[in-house]
Length: 278
Image (tube, rainbow, N blue to C red):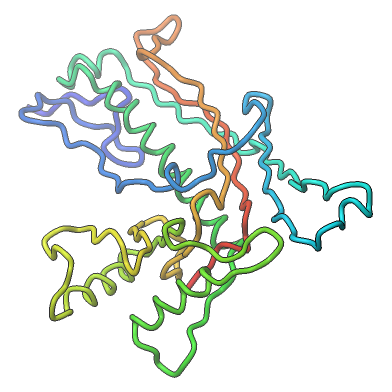
């Protein structure tokens, strides 16, 4: 006997799913951990609901000869030029399922599961956008030497950021840095550590934590062709405004239900001088 065809659930791009009793667990959507939320700047003012946030970066103080301020009759002004980040990306995720499908498909909380996936999709897009902006704004790093070894590439990259000096920065402590590597490049670093005669690393674990004092992460969301980026925490701003929802909403004058997520966000590099891409 042929199976009943669903009203709105699809098994492909446009092919309705066949309804049947489902035994066991429903396969959940899988997504690798996002990093942008942990790396983005949290120091902002303003209300995201107003459409923009403001971030400030203080210029370093200057040491001058004693008596300079008395002679001038004033001290130096504190400089902290503002950077405005507009929430100019407006997104929505809206899905609906027929009440008949919900009952017949045998999954009572299918809409709640979709709501969870909507949040995962939101986080994925924020992560992709975060790293795209970081790579676009960052400075390309080219290792010195002919065919340098991986360990030399990594140390040169770290020292390049460590020795930055300008009006805002007088060197960067390694504890403030974060390296985000593609899975392939992350694997090479891991192989390098595993090959050491006395590695201070648990080879069974995925993460190795620190490399020469720098926290290292793996991400599938780096732009194609990027081995890694090295930056400091807070180098990129990404304010987000999310319109939360609760239970699935019944569509008026029907037996269908909808679950939706609307959100707005903006992304901008605050310290492009402290972002290096390899």
